Structures are given as structure tokens and as C-alpha cells.
Image (cartoon, rainbow, N blue to C red; front, side):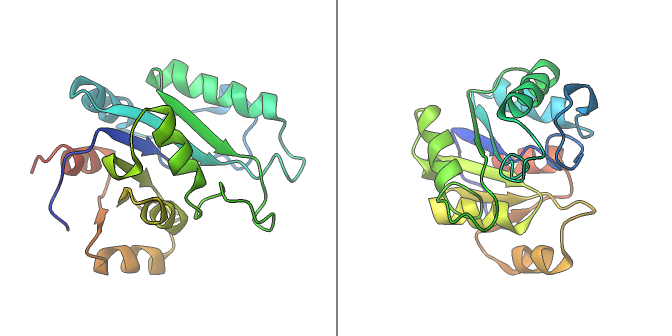
Length: 181
């Protein structure tokens, strides 16, 4: 694990990191925070750290979700976990070649700018390699919180990387970001 450095903003992946992953969820009633999400975000806010969301939503490009549904789900996340200073999401599919879809840096840069921060003053917390890669590409700190859908190779690569924190849960991720043991 790398040594912690202060961050002014933390950008969370939404599905699988902050809330239980329901593939292509367009129903706000199906939003359920992962264990510890509320406390982790509260601790960051209490420490004066801005929080945001960066999320790929390819269901829009695939015709499985409308933009209104994405906004409704994001609204429900905010109802359950409190307000976020920035919410940036990509409606494109994997083959669209956009600059915003993670692992590209666009969402991270956009959310950091909305928080009034440079990306290098932010961390990105996510559950898959694309989250780590987007953080690195943008110059932000990367934190991987693996879950059941995280590929073993992504975990192994992060564990060996000197610039990535791997945490067992959101509480440990926040401990690392706040410089606590």
C-alpha cells in the first residue's frame, strides 16, 4: 500500500462501489447503498473533503435506460447518502470512442472541475480496473475496493502497483485517504 497524501476531493464510482450493482438500473426504488457507504461519505464530509460521483452508464447508448432514469437513480443515491458536489456520468457505449467513458480520464476531469479542484487533488474510489485506469489517466489518486465482480487480474495489478491503494471496504478506503491507520 502506498503512503497516504491529503486529498481535497473523492470521486466515487456509483454502481458496485457506493450502491449495490443492479445492471442497467433505471428504478430509483432499487437503489441500495453498499454496507458502510453512508458512514464513509459522512466521514469525508466531516473532514472537509468534497465528494462526487463518476459513473459509466452505457445503458443509455444501448437503449436500456433513458437520461431521465439515470438522473432519477442519481437523485435517489443523493437522497440516501446526502448531496454530492459533482455528478458526472457517461452515456456512451464501450465502442463509441468518447473521452469521458472510464478508463478514459474525461469523467474524472469533469467532476474534479465541478468541485473546483485539479484532478491531482482528488482520489477516485472504484471497484474495477477501469476506475483505477481513469484515475491514473487523469492524474488522480486511485483506490480499488474489490467486490464480487472485480476480476482477479485487476486486483493483482492494483496490489502490485505502487500508486494504487487496495482497500477491503469503503471504511478502509476512507482511512487511507484521511491518513488514518
